Image (cartoon, rainbow, N blue to C red; front, side, top):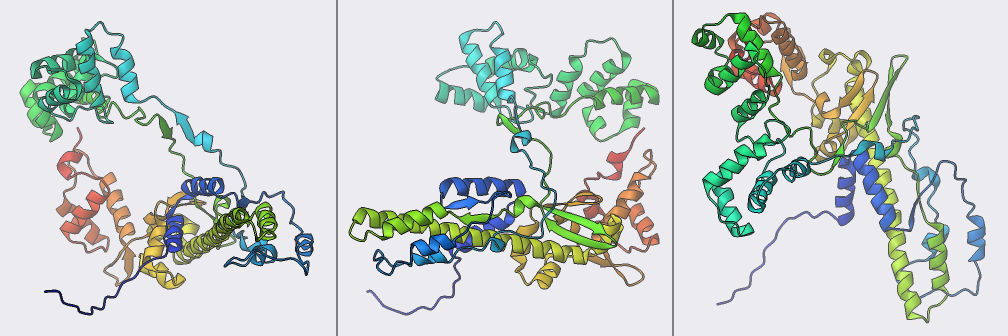
Length: 487
């Protein structure tokens, strides 16, 4: 039996424009440039104003269409909005941006690269091998990951060859092709099924009677667990060698690469590690001045040509084709005008956020000393700017600032706080810096345990639990004491 009932629900929906604005805010400079270029291509009613462009004189345009006898097309929009309500130039450009107008050439950031797959495929085609074995070798190469490893089970590859390639073979045959063809290719170590095999393949390519190389190969083959756990005394006793001999062997192992595919580009195009800062922060006479990178503050305007076209079509209200064209142009003008407003809002949001961060971390920007970083969380910046915490999060995500002390990742400026023995709030970043300094100065033959680190930091005024030390150490990518041991 059907029943009717009323139900109230509270919900919140974002308009498409709001969603687009949020996306614009979280883009870093390079992504923003690409997004802007895409929008300029898709919407011809939107134009970017070059610096050497002169201000347009709109008075003649206004006079041309103030004919008393002029009739306009009957639509649900106001054509005059685009003829007489011109977007002032000051609304489309920020006055607070970097004076450094050096153009970043995107092409310099993109370099042609050869993928690992292409590199290996070229080599395997030069090998004297049957057609079926060549297909199996190519399939194996296609299953290598970006580091050059074969992570899949051979049995799964045998099944895939049967189902997708129509090649019925055996596990032994695939292993034979892997070991005698694929693993013989350059770079040495490619096609390995694990780290141990990868290192062994590399050390075996070193044709040498050198004692250190031979010992290194022997250790990798038979004492790999002892090596990874740094049980050096066990290795010394096993081979009855001197400590210096082990040092020489470890030196040879350290020259090997655990990721032989890392130098290749898996997508043919690779982006260099160069970072384009989103903000520029200058220090003058003790004052910290935040600015937007000029790339984040383009001067945009609505196309005058499209305004003229809309005016022309508005004079012919009897033509349905002209009416449809006018509606289409109106949509493009609407989109252009909204996009300009969105860019302005993005600039304003970015500038207010970086200004609040600079206000909070003024000492750090002046000194460049991480120990002068104050505890700061997203809510602190949100309270200053009046923006939502999620908005602040989007702003700092993947953004960098060019400071007098180098390029800084904005997220690195945020940290929680702890209270020291003097009752002062200190940044967890400061504590991590102290922790890193203590570990860097330790005796590598007898590294400090987490318990020992607790005692040392407590003597420096930081009363921290052992589990907190372990957490900070892991965040700093510092291994446990046993794995930090050196000869």
